[in-house]
Image 1 (cartoon, rainbow, N blue to C red):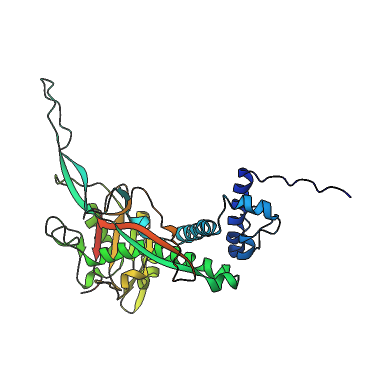
Image 2 (image 1 turned 60 degrees about the horizontal axis):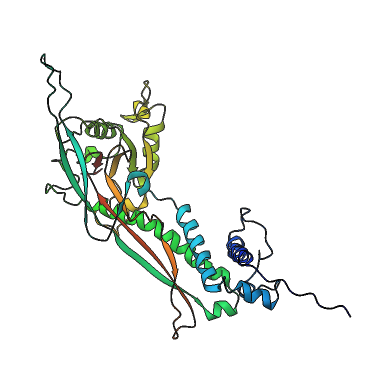
Amino acid sequence: MEKEKPRSKLTGASAVEIKGRIETFPFSRLWQSGDFPSCSFRGGSLRSMDVPRRFDNQAIQAAFSTVSLPGILSNVANKKLLQAYEAQPIIATKLCTTGDLNDFKEADRFRLTDMGDLLPVAADGEIKEGGLIEESAKNQIDTFAKKFCLTRKMIINDDLGAFLKVPVAMGNRAARLVDQLFFSRLLANPAQADGKALFSAAHKNLLTGATSALSADSLKKAIELYLDQTDADGQPIAVEPRYLVVPTALKHLAIELTRGATLVMSGGTDNVVRPALNVLADENLQVVSSPYLANSAYTGASSTGWYLFGQPGTVDTFEIGYLKGRRTPTVERGDLDFNVLGMWFRVFFDVGVREQDHRGIVKANGAA
């Protein structure tokens, strides 16, 4: 009778490989994309994750000294959440700069504004001294969080798909949170350090009245206001608008105004085509439409109001603040609770949005 061969001992490297494979199979099963390495765990289940059948008891024992089911699920949930977060379009990231804060206290965000132009050098060669003005704004982050549970029933029912839908939904919610923070602040039109509202006649960045309704003429006027913005020493900021931000009701009108080869102007009972080219098309404005602008859940919401924004980095308007460079939400596994039949996971995101400067933004009320 042939003697049984001794079983090979599973090395730490093999255990790590098993962990990677186990983490891959539920991720690929839910999304069915072809971007995942083929492995024997693809299409598996929660129970097969816990006890991989291809290994004998000795192999399993060695592997799970490094690999744990709760840890695996936490990593998988993180991957699902991050993929969902990154797949969700975030309008605020187009319009805002980003910055890092070290803690949750309100932080001063300083910027240097140049004072004075270059002057001719005098006959004696003396160069006149220039100065810098330091202006400040504020930003503050907060923690937003929620928890979810992989219940005993899910495990018994082998319902991995139901479990993984939760971090996907939370990833989408986290992405929307950034836009919610941004648009709630934008629409609130808060007072600035000078005591004036962000959009005001004093800041020369507000169009009002019936003539501010989105049209070729009002858009030209808004662009003029934008280009005439000045810095602290009264000199033009020399920045052009890049984004036309509108509610969904104005999206197609905005596209017609900014992309059409010609403009159709209303004249009497007929439409008259202007023979000249649409000069607004040369502004290269990118139309950004958002349902938040007209959502009645937000103070200051309007279906007629619209905005011009500059390119982030060229001009500071709003800043999205993150805690120490962490720009995405996080999933963590909680401690087991004797009173709950399941494993708890929590999602948290440290983020905040504040306006930085009234220059570089123009608002039109769009109505009387």
